[in-house]
Length: 115
Image 1 (cartoon, helix red, strand yellow):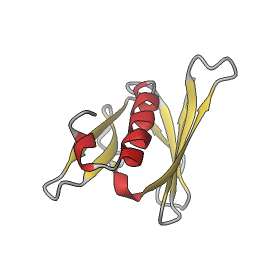
Image 2 (cartoon, rainbow, N blue to C red; image 1 turned 45 degrees about the vertical axis):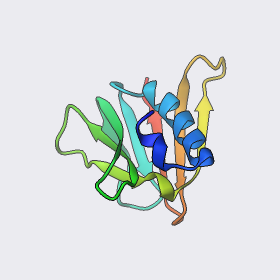
Image 3 (cartoon, rainbow, N blue to C red; image 1 turned 90 degrees about the vertical axis):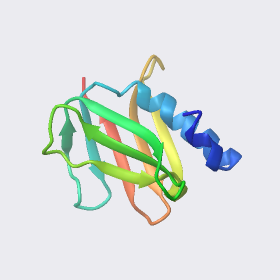
């Protein structure tokens, strides 16, 4: 995360740091991903992986993939397109249950931990 935060504003860096911390709890676990339209609906990622990186245009990107399946689509978004994130914790706040990422283009991605 340290490397990617150089090109981001302070606010974007804080958002990405919160998101990165929440996503660490989902890494390697079964996660159900939905989007606000029919591009991806109830897609189960059995071994979720994600990465934050910069492309050649120095844009910070975030992508999600399933380490166990090449059939599940890789979702890649620009950090600049993130409008808001919502992190839902369990009732006892010991773990993250769901993450909702709202993009500026009225497109939402919801990741839900499967237990």
